[in-house]
Length: 116
Image (tube, rainbow, N blue to C red; front, side, top):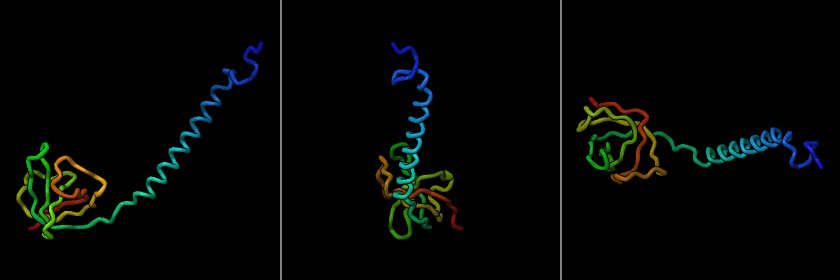
């Protein structure tokens, strides 16, 4: 009879096995993160100008009717006092993001400024 003296069922080996499994899981997560980062490099930021509107859809969304004729849903913080005013925004188009409002492509804000 084997009383804790080695073998596959030895409880004394448990901390080592857990450490090995944790290290393997950590390595697998790192590899996944690195592959994901390489595959999803961010598109370049761009600046757009247009008229800001707040629409009462799905709890309210901010849209920019850009001078180019395109309507974009803005993702980020907007001062409610800016509604109906012209502004310039800098941000990144997020083609991988979908919203329930479906008012236009999503544009993630980096910066926004009122036009004088």
